[in-house]
Image (cartoon, rainbow, N blue to C red):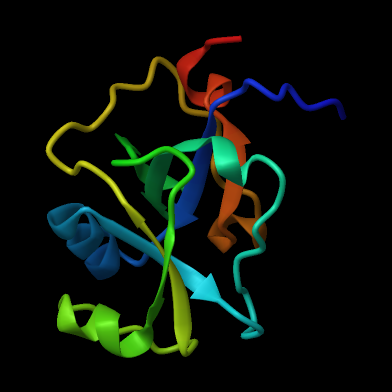
Length: 133
């Protein structure tokens, strides 16, 4: 599959209902980092990441713009706890900051249910959600 080096990318991230709500309240999306099971791999396209799409089991999808394109931080579990989160699975997390006050209206949202892969974070092109090629 060829990749367009100009394509804007979206981090698609499943979150439990309580975590989904907390992420939107704070404008913080986090994903496991390091060698724990289910950790995020930084792959080509990450530098073009400009949006985060949060969903719960493929439902309630909301798209938000990141505060800084291609920018993320690595936080320790304890730092997330200071922001009111309760991470349990890893010592370190990839953290994306987004503007929770301005959700983006999607013209289309593909089916996010992918059996066991519904719960795995992934990077997808913005055109999958906006109908832009």
